[in-house]
Amino acid sequence: MPSVRILIAEDDWIIAKEISLTLQDLGFDVIGTFDTGEEFVQKLPTLKPDLALLDIDLAGSMTGIDIAEKLKPLGIPFVFLTAMADIQTIEKAKQTEPYAYLVKPVRAESLLSTIEVSLYNFHRQKSLDSSTPSAGSLPINQAIFSINEAIFVKSKKRLEKIKIADILWIEAEDIYAIIVTKNGKYILSQPLKSIEERLPAEHFMRVHRSYIVQLDKIQAIEENDLIIEGKYIAIGKTFKEKLMSRLAFL
Image (cartoon, rainbow, N blue to C red; front, side):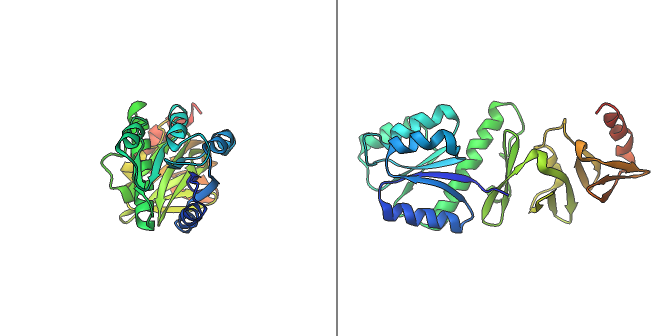
């Protein structure tokens, strides 16, 4: 399952390498590192990052601020990397509305927390802008971030991107919820109801107090069980009538 894709603009080769290796150790996917804004912008359409780390001062004529102005209308969140910058530069950088600033040298803990918070705020704002439920009440380390036809889920030290279409079902187990896909399982420390609120209702339905399923993944129904990829999932009595009604119109 692909992880969060990050693009870096940093003209100090040593710093760029250190950040890149740290990100990879944390489970992120570094899809490119560039020392000029011109090359960064040229490669941007084909790389499609989930987040960009931008040094304010770069080789070439473009600055990190110039790149940020290109990223903003594309809906790509960005974080500035900076050492010491004058007040005028910082004020100009603020106008682009970055999600955070990271002061070099960057520590792994700061890098991880900054990326998590930045993605959380970015996708929460997107959710609010589209009038869908947000994850604002969830702790950062338990959050699910909606993004178009995929969700980001926190798994250990990394954020995993899961396509909505790949989810088979979600089940409750003790205090956890388990998202099941063809490619694997993801254990989340949050209740099933929280996840249900953040999935598209037209595709998902609670069929039991312990199960949410993707409706078009249902392969068969046998009495009080439905079958998905060979898994028998019990249908709760209070859910069966509504389920059968919805399936009749699929």
